[in-house]
Image (cartoon, rainbow, N blue to C red; front, side, top):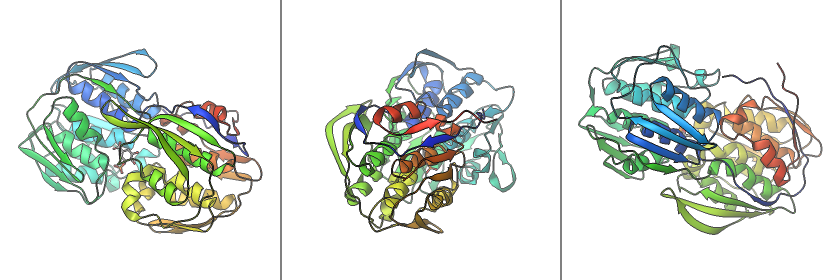
Length: 441
Ligand code: S3P
């Protein structure tokens, strides 16, 4: 699944103007395929993210005996096989770059009557799986991992799972979801309590597929032994993909951009709050609902940003948006302090180190701390920076480059296709200066 290396030449760019729509939500797309596969009947998914991560999840269900048709771009028809209808795959299941894929599948596969092996790419193979293995083992799952709880994961046939009352030590929707999905196959009640509320798509979607589930911010519980019924899922546009444009239009003078029908689940929109605290001019033009999720058209105009102390309580609601926030902070007036965000060190890359190093290479004043960073705003210069193969680092650096005083060469950007296929063309259409260099290797 590893793509040839791709570098970008980015910025400086002119104002961002016009209207654009970003692709479907990654979290929702993964879950729609998973629950559609375990449901009885034919589920339709509209707005499916055609990214490598979510396509890897769909391909895995194909290997487990589920027919998934793709009648058109971003449209999937999942022919569900029911809770007990999956079949063993002949060899390892490749989750690619997707932590969500691997962690949720670990819970789901722990409930099956057959063994499975989950593998991932170089980045995913470095990410901690102990956080899901520990509660799943406590439920009776038999899972072997590599040294230090790293992938690959060998998940043995279910010999009888038991519900659990699990107080998660990390605020992680992936951990919560893995435990809840195993709970579908467990005797009794499975309950997860979180240290801080995280995105609740698994809970909402289980309910939409007809499974009784009780949930409120920070807590979710369900009983095993029910059935999932096919339904239609309409995937909203991914706030995390919109985030790059929210920052780009905020920092490039003259910008006035409208992002259409963006998913506004409150557990995802922390960046909006943080940017507004920094002085950003972002308005919600039209609000509505799509597939049971709040959506809005977001209008963002250039504004002078100033530094802030990012409230630690906002961190889980903007966990994927820190690379973009770092860019806003590097171009703001004064100091921004990020704390309580140690989770960033175990994402697709160590995002604190990756962003600090990359922005320093462009002349920014960034000091790393164990759980965040202190960023003092100032001018950026052209140069070279490394994305560490992390999609969100690459796109954030492309935004930073728009305000640099010369071109920025960004290394290793192919993984942008994991979450945001078509980013380059869309970004150019909005006004960003961005070119792909010939693929390397
Ligand atoms: C996700 C949860 C978050 C997020 C990831 C997607 C999900 O991870 O960073 O991009 O779909 O559940 P954690 O649960 O590890 O915080």
